[in-house]
Image (cartoon, rainbow, N blue to C red):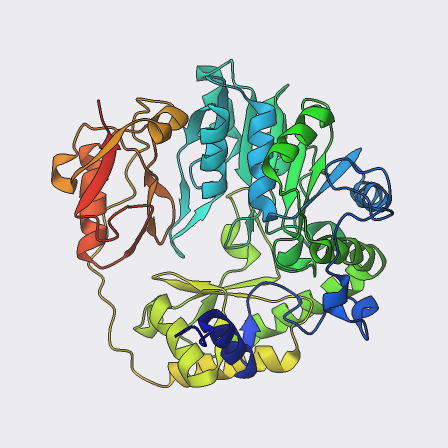
Length: 475
């Protein structure tokens, strides 16, 4: 048995199969920085020897690389992250709010933010999810939602939201910054590192006045996976406090391969970002037009979002499949099995394809060819028995930190009514938590979870994946 290497074999087989990779990371193994051509890549896997600096106390080349990144985005400070945006978001939560202090959050925040709440002890104030019904996708929060939340919670320390979201829908950051007033606006910009480099794209968070942004440079910026950076204005959050939080969370053995890729990605975006993004956006427009020529698929465009206050990141193709007689999951699976096209994600109603720096016209042609092939067939028929609507945000009975760290016990789902959840439970899609640690299992939450389990949907966060039992805080 020990002669097998299952992970190596799986990744090797996937790559050697030559799939059309319409997913992150943007480099797809083809568009790594030119400086790496001809280099012995593995020989660059070094450590903190003299002259190569220290990520936790940078004074040499790491410090200079971070300074260049800050200058590129027009902010005072930038920090390299080797644990993805996850570690940056957690550091911001630690720096922004202490135990019992309140922070306003959109409900659909990444689970890394929940981890930050557990680490910091902060008290969340969640905004209800807005939905775009034609595509059945979540929208970012609106400024008036922030106004309302702050009127009810005047002691809030910060506001945090995602821009753009997984579907490429971007928030009205300027409006949200204005609504937040004299509070720090923190932005999960994991999917938005490229926004600063082309005027057709939504405005990036820092240019719109945010206090801090965390960007996954590996997603669309060309760095290696887990390479990210944190941008900080320093008006509300002091750099030293943020740096101390990163000291607490980041490894003391950071990958120089990741940090090199961040430095090189920064250079390429600075020198060639606009022309690279112009090519990607042109390719995305042409592909959307080709898909629209023949039904039954509809591609999300800016015109669909009129009146929502949101804009669309044009590098993402959100393709609605409702009229095809198939679900998004089925379409994504058939694209992979029949046409060797791997998209970024799928939900019941949509598939999402990401076009990046390495995407070629022939990749987009393969997607169009696959969709047209599926359009000529009759689907097996969708099960339109509706899920209940996402339940209202349940009452917070304990801080997430106290609920997660405290004693817990398992009970059957049907017996959890009125109890306090010890875990974060989210149905995919849409991935918005039904209940989080410290929140109450309301009748609406139980109905929603039971319906999801009955329909075989994916439930994340439950100790029992079938959700026959859930973990509650033991009183």
